[in-house]
Amino acid sequence: MKTLLTIIMTIYISCLTPELAAQNTSKWEFGVAAGLGRTYYDRNYYEDSRKFKDDGGGYISHFKSNYVWGTGLWVERHINARFSGLLQFAYHQTDILPDVFSQWYDSGFWYARETHHHARAESGIRWYINPRSKFKLFIEAKAGIEKFLTVTEHPFYEEKLIIRDAFGYDLVLPVASATAGIKWRRFALAADYGQDILGARRDDPEKFGPLPEKAEIKTKRITVKATFTIFK
Image (cartoon, rainbow, N blue to C red; front, side):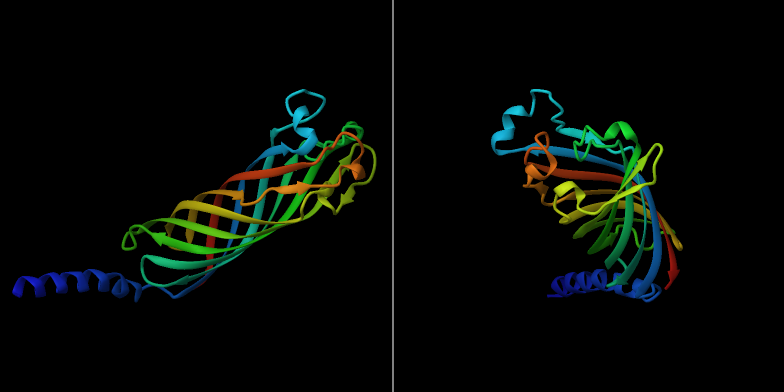
């Protein structure tokens, strides 16, 4: 009986310790974030266009952006010393070679560069691996939605052109991400990996001429992100 009570007390104290440590941690934190990375695209052609996938003729299946940079706001709600809930809002823009995404090969010659603009909202949970340390290691998982806002084309000798329909691809997609990082006081540095849960589909090839067959694009994003806590 004495052994059983010892075991129960040990378990109780081990569960209570994170709660006691959390008393020195603010329940709410609000901050800003900035990141830099790259996006990778996988395009799948389907129905009758599948036979052209590897036959050349401009059917590009895999490509990547030049860079991606973004900024955002986040809110963290500490549950205890080890776990917290997250809510994040972000804007990011992607610099990409003209017409690779859309496959409008008759216009790329006139464009110096192409920029895609996105907005994203995600929520998830963060786990602090060593909450008592001065340098806290953490991992987090999030899910949410991403909205394709606009495309900005930058011609060589004309004013910029704004495109709002994402070349016929879906504008809103579910996304997910995973992050690992280190936090020191109000600062944190992390590596973030995100991807589309569903692909963006284009189902109206007649709108864009004979080349852009029906297709689906899935993206993966790798970003290095820095955050700063403003209020806590």
